[in-house]
Length: 130
Image (cartoon, rainbow, N blue to C red; front, side, top):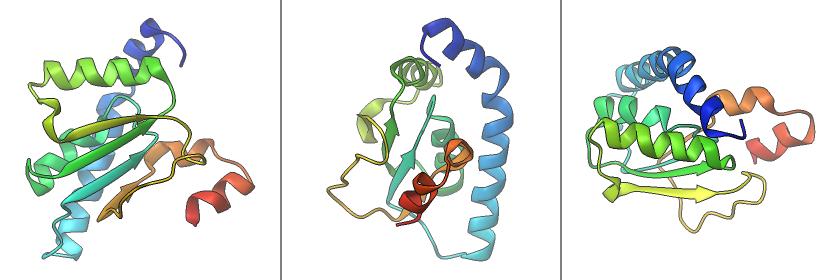
């Protein structure tokens, strides 16, 4: 997705369904690991920040997010989406780039790869699992 209009179309068409899946996963994570409450989260291929609302709903507003997204149009859509949702960027850091080149400077309590993992092939999948 390389332009604003396509990113906006993605937000309108795909974000609701994707968000519902993430809400379900976060609910099951809480159910299964009742005491687990992440303080930090890395979202690889965060798109328009779809996971932010679900994670905040499940674990509270104090989670620190690192959102890795290589498509500038998707990041722009995500920044607009979060602003419209009234979420201030204080605990949200965006990182531009490809997950394969990303060198985290910290450990994360929770790492998401959501739908980005569907786009990977062969060696990319192995890299993701490292």
